[in-house]
Length: 490
Image: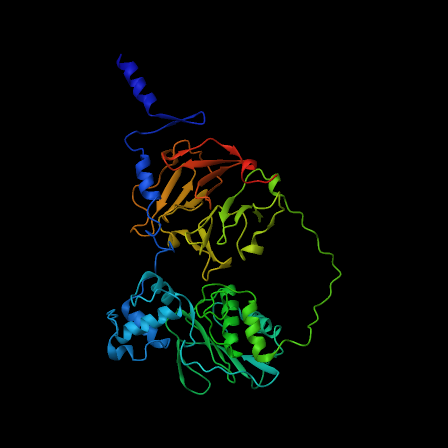
């Protein structure tokens, strides 16, 4: 009798997942009510950016506002505490900064304001700028020194590329000279330095990437305290050269002249091309490209319906759904599309992605591979990425299988038989209750390929050529269905 009772108790703790018995400890299994509390919070409960805000002290913020031209008084004279009292000079300066960068004008040093203050930026003041243009059709530049973080030959090539990108879009020729005088001097400078007229210049800590002067001086100074990657250096060079040619900051985030280096640009956006052409006119001569007789091989790309599995699936900011597999992505609105190179839509994103999601509000798309995460806004890589998952979303593991965002903005990350809840509003963001077994979601398959919070407000899981839908009432995963029945138009 005792043996029979023990057998019954053991059987009661077994859950069958599509024919496979899984042993669940009834004392630790999470109930659906817990998952509902953590998944179905109010839509405004969590922020629009899940990443932790950087530490910015009130003193650092006040000094920043002074040096960027928003605070008309010396921070040392009036004190550096941001008292957040309406009418106080520091409060006014913070509101001016928030207004300029299209943030809520609260006058408070909130997380969004801290992120922008700490972002890599151009050192040209935001206020009282009087830009000009060059009055001759050919201008020269000379490189006096290079950043220590780049080889001189590589830095020279990138600087030349940056000047060339601007020159090809306007009726203006730019030539490097290595001896004698030049119109524009390019140099690597200490945080405290002088311009060519002997006036003092200063970089704001190591968040200032570089600064430049307007015509007809045009010099470009890189911050010696910064360590540049090639992509960052090219993008920063194009931005600063824009100033050297007479362009001011603009508040369009897609522009290369946006004052914060939040994205990397490898070419000049159309809006900036037009701004330069308004100063110098459209180029009237066509540059000849070198001819080649080497045939270009035609790449054969796999079609969607030939895939055995996908790596991940994601909605972009516009709401379109894409599947990624290997080095290719597929538009799921099309019938059996051929793959397109991932890097053609998301520049510098590698293939074979582990997981991806677009965060609530559609502003940021996160891609995970191994121990690193790439973050894109409007399909442009955010500055400073890729970064370690452990620093961007602390508490989440490497080598994810899948990830999705709940209706409230928590992130569910899945790896093999375990999952993690990341709540951006909590500290720590991942509680000590995690990781937990995916069997909390009854009938959840293990070793997933992808997960998706779709635009139809449903949650889906993908494995091989099958998908599963999550029932939000009891957090049970439904039976598998063929990808062709909803996702693949074969």
